[in-house]
Length: 135
Image (cartoon, rainbow, N blue to C red):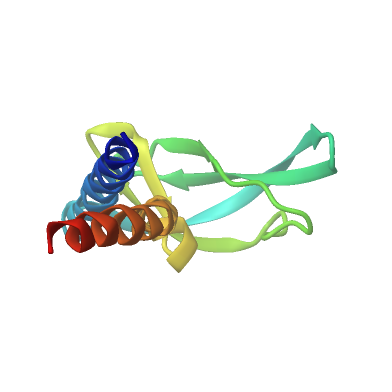
């Protein structure tokens, strides 16, 4: 019966690993085919939570047709990561308005890293037990 638990851990690790690789590949594709430009932080949105307030930046940038586009970051922090008026490098997909990322380690690879942190112990514990029981 305990073997099912370890199979479930191993399977959860494999699913997390799959989505981590998918996230990495999407980022790699965006970096190779996306349009790189400079955006300006125009606003900081206050996000209130049980632990206090965090601040989420809103960026504005001009696309190739010189239309001004806005991008609200998914990440909020305290202290704020950016200041209003600050220039930030971004990459965006011209065909997909939702595909915008700041060019920074955490801006590009955050989901890949988070999913790998989940997958690693699940694969080690589940896979280690299954390999041990095989011998």
